[in-house]
Length: 410
Image (cartoon, rainbow, N blue to C red):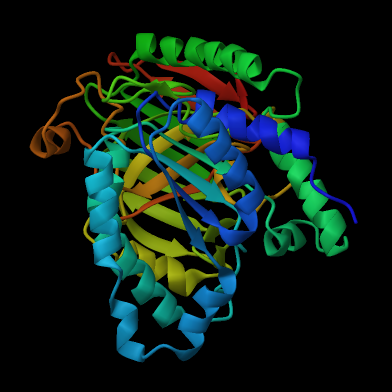
């Protein structure tokens, strides 16, 4: 029986603890993961305790249990969420508990379930989780996301392989994209962080007022928030810990102005959103708001998402990723936002990252006055390709090339 490379599992676990969440001695660590990822969670716990963790607490999910709810639970239960759990998570964050999430669930788990139940359950969960999620988007604590090759996910990505071979191949793709296949992953991430810092420094020095995207199906102007700051790779959390939130990560990103987005744009890769596939998204913005939205698959879910709250149909993030990124060049569509967003430039509906401002202690009112968006959702979807050009418009109205055919110009 073929097995996932245990040495690479160990390397990814150590990388996630040392450079990902950058756990400090004396911190507690909260891990959420699919039950299939138990081998990785065990290794993470081992390295966390070696790094001086006080308590490592894993929270596991299971696809079959999730499906049981949508098949058999009372109809009115889909407007409810486990508030007590999310309240506890928020309290843990307030006590400086570090957060690690492991992705690996079936990306299309709920594709055949009642879309109304899916939408209501998502809305209830998003509402209950919002206070805890805001502690993450405000970067109050050090956090990290990595992945595990779940069986159902692997078969979605490689449908023509046996389950065993698909898991091995997806595992290798995850390790490669995460830079966990090399001899010294930690040194590799130190070099990668330096490269991303060069890009963020250039963008911050230019201090663009807006970005212009042009390409097939896309003619879009995204205004940037006042006093915005570009970030990427390792970032400093408010608790003083420098961590790498996303592994892998090829992006640099900032906060757009929620009122200053105009034009139309189409997605360049499918979006897997909480068990549903949304593909070929086409939207039109006016004064920052989506006024028309369509999708060839999952349009009903998309329409419901856009009505989640007042900020759900506005942008909270804009990110630049070159088409030459390792994930793009792999040719694999992962049906997982953590990976697919690092294959292409993307935008996110909903909540902005409040850390992407030059001043870090802004109140919600100050963030809003600078153009930051507020919402219970944050959903990334891909709009970049090797056919997309991006220009930056500076404060004097001058246009400066940023991307040509999906590649950096600087």
